[in-house]
Figure 1 (spheres, rainbow, N blue to C red):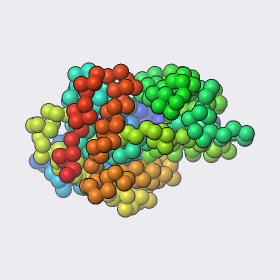
Figure 2 (cartoon, rainbow, N blue to C red; figure 1 turned 90 degrees about the vertical axis):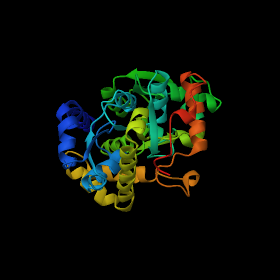
Figure 3 (cartoon, rainbow, N blue to C red; figure 1 turned 30 degrees about the vertical axis):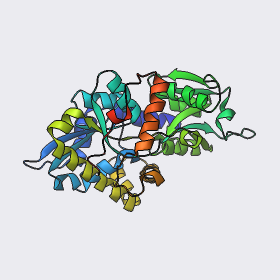
Figure 4 (cartoon, rainbow, N blue to C red; figure 1 turned 120 degrees about the vertical axis):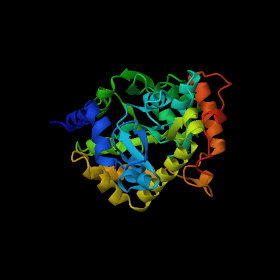
Length: 341
């Protein structure tokens, strides 16, 4: 069986087993304690390094010590996760500014209450080939890129190309079923694919390495995309009605991410041990990558999770332009630092 087929079956099996979302992850990680506040967290995808701080905080009892009984539930992508938080299906979720702004543009009331990656973790990945050099956005001209129909890349890539002085149509974007993106890319049917540090990038590199191939990437942030990445999302209602729960959850979560930074190998082992089909080395690479995105010069001197104000302003500006959102949707609408300061 080819590696991409194995991976597809594994990821599909996990995603399709509804019980792993509501029962599997919760049962493995949550520790019910009497009189504790129950909290549901949407992982936005399958267990991986990007949400490792939450998983570690559950496993190490950090939430329990904060009086919280937290269950982590498998999600189905950033936008759906944020919308489900807005609908009250979850108390918190792993989301990003784009999803929050799109949610609010439709009347939602979601808010970011802390960052996990203060810089955008997205990149454009390609297979390294003899005689082909891809070192800057202009080198992408004429290539095809596969992505999900609802993926933000359908708007991000054209806006990013334009910001780099290139026609927005320089890269041909194809709308693919998510289950076909990796095989299409690894088999060469598309030249480029979206990849995310702390998430699918190590997976892609592992799959390519088993075929004797190498993955290269252009990171958006290295070419002008100054956006905040993912973080913790909740709702205005939660903040208003249960501010103490929000604060305890946020603080315990960053204890988890601190432990992840200090013990990357042990953290990867803790997470991977719960899922025998997970590749521990891939998990470790995800953990290391997410650890490298949690802070930078702009957040120096601030507590973990602090959302940098200038970058949030730049993020809101880019998203408004890329997605044609109203100018009335401000950066200050989509985040607060009150729970991390």
